[in-house]
Image (cartoon, rainbow over all chains, first blue to last red; front, side):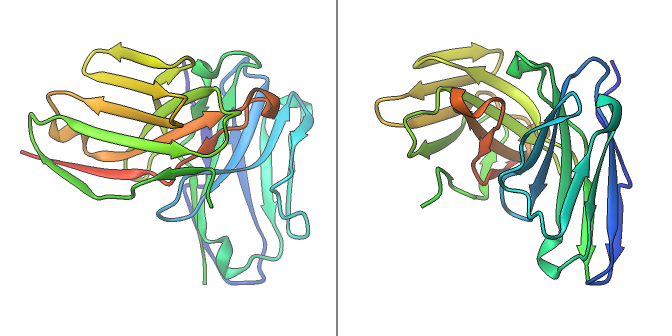
Length: 114
Length: 112
């Protein structure tokens, strides 16, 4: 079974620029998550989709972050404009609606804002 | 106060030793407990998943949950250099859907 695919693997941008990350979940996984992992910390949920609807975006900084999951498959996460404190690894994960055992993470996109 | 606390380490042990990791939590609503392993520049991968208090064993790994003390543990027996990684505990509240709340992770180094 193919895993969760993310691109790009690395990105360096200047503050105030915009950036977008892409995620392709495991086939058949209805639920998709974006997590932010700052160096030395555990992942923090930014947004959760079920199919193409948002389930939880309570910790998404909506003034600068946006995410979409068109057609309930791939997803993109965008930051505009980026701040220095957005430097982190952005992890995408997917799971079946029921069954935490299926919760699978991608390798992440490492963002550095300079 | 963070909902889930975890000692960041690093924890250095000789090969073959038992690795002991733990997390404490403050919210009694957490009912599902997981341990993830994260290698450098990789995403977390699920190691163990428990629901009830008590012990659960899987090969060299044993997970313990003590809900009365709000304390969970992971033990790794016969540790190998390949076990060197960051170990993250994660928890889920039923009312929060599939949202996971993670500890900060403990870095483990197993020396040959």
